[in-house]
Image 1 (spheres, rainbow, N blue to C red):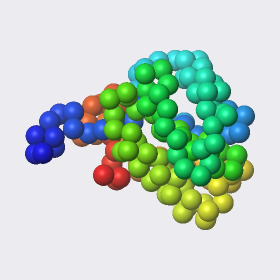
Image 2: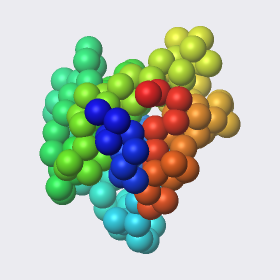
Image 3: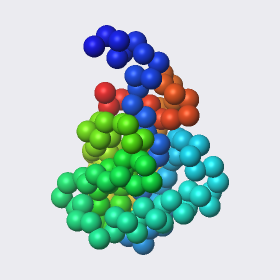
Image 4: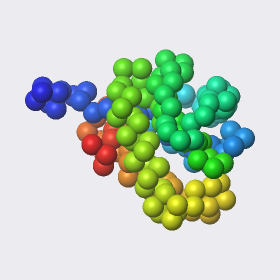
Length: 151
Protein backbone atom coordinates (compact mmCIF):
# COMPACT_ATOMS: atom_id res chain seq x y z
CA UNK A 1 0.00 0.00 0.00
CA UNK A 2 2.82 2.43 0.79
CA UNK A 3 4.29 1.85 -2.69
CA UNK A 4 1.10 3.37 -4.10
CA UNK A 5 1.73 6.62 -2.24
CA UNK A 6 5.45 6.72 -3.02
CA UNK A 7 5.22 6.13 -6.74
CA UNK A 8 5.49 9.13 -9.07
CA UNK A 9 2.20 8.28 -10.76
CA UNK A 10 0.13 7.81 -7.59
CA UNK A 11 -2.06 10.82 -8.21
CA UNK A 12 -5.23 10.14 -10.19
CA UNK A 13 -5.58 12.51 -13.13
CA UNK A 14 -8.42 14.56 -14.56
CA UNK A 15 -8.08 15.41 -18.25
CA UNK A 16 -10.82 18.03 -18.30
CA UNK A 17 -13.84 19.46 -16.53
CA UNK A 18 -16.71 20.63 -18.69
CA UNK A 19 -19.88 22.46 -17.76
CA UNK A 20 -22.08 22.85 -20.83
CA UNK A 21 -25.57 24.26 -21.25
CA UNK A 22 -28.60 22.38 -22.58
CA UNK A 23 -27.51 23.12 -26.17
CA UNK A 24 -23.94 21.87 -25.68
CA UNK A 25 -22.40 25.34 -25.54
CA UNK A 26 -19.64 26.16 -23.05
CA UNK A 27 -20.46 27.63 -19.68
CA UNK A 28 -17.17 26.77 -17.95
CA UNK A 29 -14.44 24.42 -19.20
CA UNK A 30 -10.95 23.63 -18.04
CA UNK A 31 -8.51 21.30 -19.85
CA UNK A 32 -5.52 19.73 -18.08
CA UNK A 33 -4.35 17.50 -20.93
CA UNK A 34 -2.58 18.17 -24.23
CA UNK A 35 -4.79 15.55 -25.88
CA UNK A 36 -6.84 18.37 -27.45
CA UNK A 37 -4.17 20.84 -28.60
CA UNK A 38 -6.35 23.40 -30.39
CA UNK A 39 -9.54 25.18 -29.50
CA UNK A 40 -11.28 23.63 -32.50
CA UNK A 41 -10.28 20.13 -31.26
CA UNK A 42 -11.69 20.98 -27.83
CA UNK A 43 -14.94 22.27 -29.31
CA UNK A 44 -15.27 19.16 -31.49
CA UNK A 45 -14.73 16.92 -28.46
CA UNK A 46 -17.34 18.84 -26.47
CA UNK A 47 -19.87 18.65 -29.31
CA UNK A 48 -19.32 14.91 -29.81
CA UNK A 49 -19.49 14.17 -26.09
CA UNK A 50 -22.65 16.24 -25.68
CA UNK A 51 -24.30 14.48 -28.61
CA UNK A 52 -23.38 11.07 -27.25
CA UNK A 53 -24.75 11.74 -23.76
CA UNK A 54 -27.77 13.89 -24.63
CA UNK A 55 -30.29 11.05 -24.54
CA UNK A 56 -29.03 9.74 -21.23
CA UNK A 57 -31.04 10.14 -18.06
CA UNK A 58 -28.20 11.32 -15.80
CA UNK A 59 -30.38 13.61 -13.70
CA UNK A 60 -30.69 11.56 -10.53
CA UNK A 61 -27.19 10.07 -10.37
CA UNK A 62 -23.96 10.43 -12.27
CA UNK A 63 -23.46 8.17 -15.29
CA UNK A 64 -20.23 6.62 -16.54
CA UNK A 65 -19.24 6.02 -20.15
CA UNK A 66 -16.14 5.39 -22.25
CA UNK A 67 -15.69 7.97 -25.00
CA UNK A 68 -12.62 8.22 -27.28
CA UNK A 69 -10.58 6.01 -24.91
CA UNK A 70 -11.48 8.20 -21.93
CA UNK A 71 -13.66 7.55 -18.92
CA UNK A 72 -16.34 10.23 -18.71
CA UNK A 73 -18.47 10.79 -15.63
CA UNK A 74 -21.41 13.11 -16.20
CA UNK A 75 -24.47 14.51 -14.51
CA UNK A 76 -27.25 16.81 -15.69
CA UNK A 77 -28.83 19.41 -13.40
CA UNK A 78 -31.51 21.80 -14.66
CA UNK A 79 -30.06 23.19 -17.91
CA UNK A 80 -26.40 22.41 -17.08
CA UNK A 81 -24.40 19.33 -18.00
CA UNK A 82 -21.36 18.51 -15.83
CA UNK A 83 -18.58 16.28 -17.23
CA UNK A 84 -15.30 14.98 -15.75
CA UNK A 85 -12.92 13.13 -18.09
CA UNK A 86 -10.04 10.87 -17.09
CA UNK A 87 -7.86 8.33 -18.86
CA UNK A 88 -9.18 4.84 -19.49
CA UNK A 89 -6.92 3.54 -16.71
CA UNK A 90 -8.30 5.89 -14.04
CA UNK A 91 -10.58 4.79 -11.23
CA UNK A 92 -14.14 5.75 -12.17
CA UNK A 93 -15.19 5.89 -8.52
CA UNK A 94 -12.59 8.56 -7.80
CA UNK A 95 -13.66 10.51 -10.88
CA UNK A 96 -17.29 10.25 -9.72
CA UNK A 97 -16.20 11.57 -6.33
CA UNK A 98 -14.55 14.53 -8.02
CA UNK A 99 -17.73 15.25 -9.97
CA UNK A 100 -19.88 15.03 -6.85
CA UNK A 101 -17.44 17.21 -4.89
CA UNK A 102 -17.43 19.83 -7.63
CA UNK A 103 -21.22 19.76 -7.90
CA UNK A 104 -21.67 20.03 -4.11
CA UNK A 105 -19.22 22.94 -3.89
CA UNK A 106 -21.00 24.82 -6.67
CA UNK A 107 -24.42 24.07 -5.14
CA UNK A 108 -23.29 25.44 -1.78
CA UNK A 109 -21.82 28.60 -3.29
CA UNK A 110 -24.88 29.22 -5.50
CA UNK A 111 -27.33 28.39 -2.66
CA UNK A 112 -28.73 25.37 -4.54
CA UNK A 113 -29.83 27.50 -7.50
CA UNK A 114 -27.96 25.66 -10.24
CA UNK A 115 -28.97 26.84 -13.69
CA UNK A 116 -27.28 28.52 -16.63
CA UNK A 117 -28.28 32.08 -15.71
CA UNK A 118 -27.02 31.73 -12.13
CA UNK A 119 -23.84 30.00 -13.32
CA UNK A 120 -23.03 32.76 -15.81
CA UNK A 121 -23.66 35.44 -13.19
CA UNK A 122 -21.28 33.64 -10.81
CA UNK A 123 -18.69 32.36 -13.26
CA UNK A 124 -15.85 33.46 -10.97
CA UNK A 125 -17.26 31.23 -8.22
CA UNK A 126 -17.57 28.29 -10.63
CA UNK A 127 -13.93 28.61 -11.73
CA UNK A 128 -12.83 28.98 -8.11
CA UNK A 129 -14.59 25.70 -7.30
CA UNK A 130 -12.96 23.99 -10.30
CA UNK A 131 -9.53 25.29 -9.28
CA UNK A 132 -10.02 24.09 -5.70
CA UNK A 133 -11.09 20.60 -6.74
CA UNK A 134 -8.30 19.96 -9.26
CA UNK A 135 -4.73 21.13 -8.75
CA UNK A 136 -2.99 21.72 -12.10
CA UNK A 137 -0.45 18.93 -11.97
CA UNK A 138 1.15 19.77 -8.62
CA UNK A 139 2.24 16.56 -7.01
CA UNK A 140 1.47 14.50 -10.08
CA UNK A 141 1.97 14.44 -13.81
CA UNK A 142 2.27 18.09 -14.95
CA UNK A 143 0.25 17.28 -18.07
CA UNK A 144 -2.79 16.29 -16.01
CA UNK A 145 -4.82 17.75 -13.19
CA UNK A 146 -4.25 16.13 -9.83
CA UNK A 147 -7.07 15.87 -7.28
CA UNK A 148 -6.26 18.38 -4.60
CA UNK A 149 -8.91 18.62 -1.90
CA UNK A 150 -11.04 15.57 -2.59
CA UNK A 151 -8.80 12.68 -1.52
